[in-house]
Amino acid sequence: MLSAQAIHFCIRKKPIVDQANLVIQPGEILAVLGPNGAGKSTLFKILSGEIPCSHGQVEYNGLQIGSLKPRQLAEVRAVMPQHSSVNFPFSAREVIELGLITIKAKNPRKILDEVMDLTGTTPLQNKLYQHLSGGEKQRVQLARVLVQIWDTKPFPRYLLLDEPTSSLDIAQQHAVLGILEKLKAKNIGILVILHELNLAAQYADRIALLKNGLVARVGAVNEIMEEKLLSQVFDYPVQLMKNPLNGHWIVGTSAHSFSNLSKSKQA
Amino acid sequence: MNNLTLNHTKSRVNSLLLGGMLVFLVVLGLFSLSQGVFSISFAQVVSILFPIDWVEYESRQVNVLYSIRLPRILMATLIGGGLGIAGASLQGLFRNPLVEPGLIGVSSGSALFAVIFLVLIPGIAQSFAWITLVGLPFFAFLGGLIHVLAVYFLGGRGKTDTATLILAGVAINALAGALIGLTLFYADDAALRSFTFWSLGDLGGTSWAKVPLAAGLILLPSLLLIGESKNLNALSLGEQEAFHMGVNVKQTKIKLLLLTALIVGVGVAFTGMIGFVGLVVPHLIRISFGADHRLVLPASFLLGAILLNVADLIGRTWVAPAELPIGVITALLGAPFFIALIFQLHKSRS
Image (cartoon, rainbow over all chains, first blue to last red; front, side, top):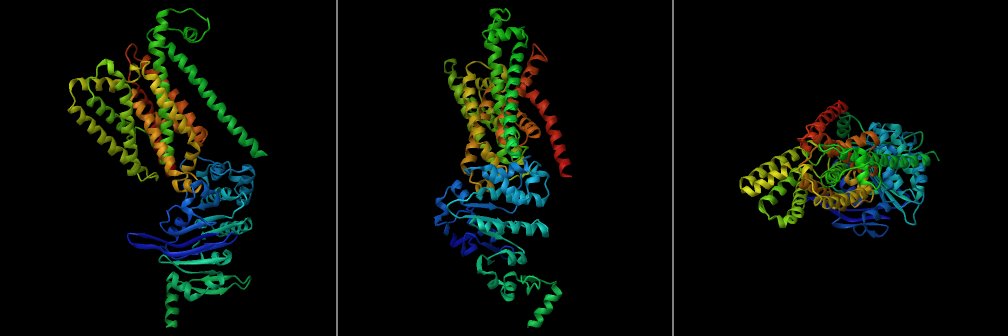
């Protein structure tokens, strides 16, 4: 279990993350959503260990994050940041192999083959990373973080992703989230920051809504799918409906003129 | 299976490549030993150095070879290799292919502290020459370290903002230049004289006394740098990413900064500022063989050594019996390369 208790982070006395509590169970996808500036990225950095947690506690499988060395932490969790640039002419395969840099794997080649197969990066492996398209780069980065925690260990592992779908088209977005879904069977707990409510509603097991550094609500998808709650969190009217084909939630937003109209109707 | 053979071939190609460069360096060194005002043939060089009775030679030739040419060529190999590997490491650390010890001010930092040392401890009696021998590189190392730290923090801590980085380098170069001038203003005649000798002291002044010290202070840090090549690979994705992958980023950075400042400092202390080797060499290696630091670092050492030996050879044979300073040759070779690089960057951006 990855747990955060009462974590708190301020910049110039202004709380960015305010007494947040969050739990990620192995084998589940927790989507974190919220408007820009809600503190998602800061929360993400505290959970990944990038920002030292000075107030509150972050524990990986019951171990305090501060007591883990970078190498030990890398065995328990992998992190995919929003943007990673590579300034030197590495091949895609070399970038993916970097994920194994501190990991003692029995059969690194098998890990690489399986992950490249899953992420569809096998045909890219000998190309220069710099020459790949945005979507291909994203998949290579995903492959890199996956090899790091691919090997089954006696303890659960975690994967943290910061908007992994940001530069992807519709098909690629679903491909990435489909990959995350498959990881659940490997006893991996996943925290993913998303902007797209529809994707979160379809793929997440639970959703955490963040606003002004506070965790506004955490719960199963059905508990979060309330028009009033979502409209408040995002400061914009949101309409919910069910997809007649598969029963999934569809989150709709409308252009401003229409939203004003509905607001006046409500009043 | 295909990948297995692919990877296997890759590491074999790498060792072949490094082996080939080493052989070339040795042959070049032997050839360079045979060139110069005093005539010694290639066959004589081989006969003198190795226990082979190939051709006859005179004792005067042995003297010239051992006391003048050999230490000089060993020094060129050490300094060139050191500059190559230090340049490659700094580029990796700063995540920027334009970084070079001279350009970002590490060399001038070393020079400033070397000058301060020469002025503070002027006119040391010949019997205490060892103080200069050890103190000069130590001070140069300190100066290089302070400057590389300053540039690193001014330039945004390893974020790849080239403009800030270069500007920080320019500012620090200018400041160091001014402080060198100021120090010299207060220097007495004896200090001025030792400064003049030092600043002109390209490879020509190499004596056997300097070689073992340079060997220790350049080869050992170079080996330690090669040990960091995996971490440098991780750092090329970014510091956060390297941390996520389990690299102790802080420790790695401190090691890299210390080792490169040491190598550059020793180089500056013994041969003055030699520019462009640290820029050109890692570039050529990356363009030709890829960016994996496990290859780039050792290959940069070898190519740097080769390049500086070539420059030295040109410098002492072109206008013989006079000599061109080696820094002039490397700048003549390096500056056009640097300009071409800028054009290439422009092209790839547009």
